[in-house]
Length: 384
DNA sequence: TTTGTTGCGGGTTGACCACG
DNA sequence: CGTGGTCAACCCGCAACAAA
Image (cartoon, rainbow, N blue to C red; front, side, top):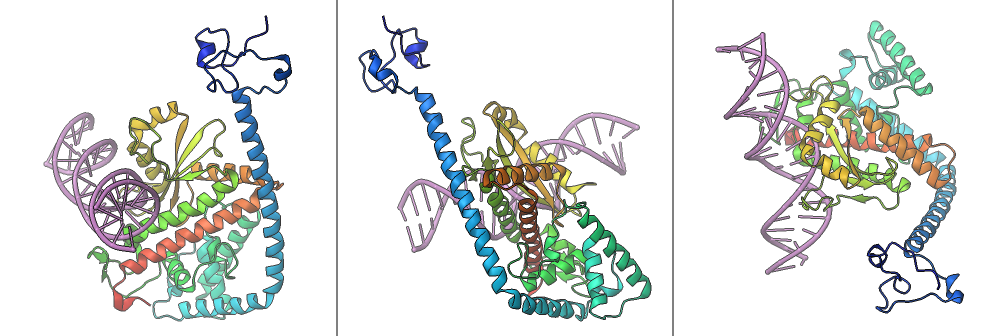
């Protein structure tokens, strides 16, 4: 008597002594394996796993090859564009000059509490612009503190790389118009001397433009999608099978689409449904921490489905940023894990360059969103 | 190719309820 | 009665998809 084919097919589960030939569906007749066939036989599940492993191997090789090509290409481009860089830096200086010399320049009412404002204030100084002495001193202190924290790796959970990105090939670079608008918003600088009628909602647009960050639903959605796409780029580096806007996660709610991005790269053994959100700190429901408030709100929205999703092996994870680019701690953890996974896949020893690059791009998308929302709210005659 | 439908985003508003 | 929290409905635009 030869041994039965001991796979976990329905036949085996039902106590039938013999499985079917090969993949247990080819023939209705019981099949007894001949000794000569035994060495070639592959259990269906093993076969599938092997196939997945081969594919994974091929993908990894492909990504490593692609990365090396990209790196070589970037090196060549950088060499070729040194002259262009100088030209662009000059242009950036001109943009800042234009901004500073505009009638509503914020030079006299800066709140020097963040690295961003410090950066701008020090640029004023470098451009030989007049700043009150006390302001200059505060600016220098804040700038030094910001630099120190950047060098030490602190304060990296705020995506403000776009402030320093002036060259078109920098990952977080903004278009000049968007840059000026985003910096003005960030500084709380005036766009007008008095409140204006909002073009988007017919309400009142305050002179410093904060209203725009809670209005303009079209630009808001567009910006959200841009941020989602930037996150997706990082996710795809970590997990080639990741998908956007996946439907049908739950049989009981087939129309539900809680995941902006569905990936296996964030939590081991679980599929993560990443839901991107951007919150305004001065919105009425923002609370003390707008990112935490939005995380709670998002989880409450899907509270009914969370257990069912978990039963399917899907973990719902909101990824929340403030509209100034600050990450919620959960977002930081998820991005770090994604960057680690991506670096591992690409054969890179350090995940931090990948993380920095992704953060810069996400920060730029958030800043671009703010600028777009402001543009949508400004009355036509006030738009530059 | 156009049009319609659906779900979602990020917010506001108002109803409702519990509590002091 | 005032306050604060929760919840649903709503706004308008976008993206994806299906149907015409």
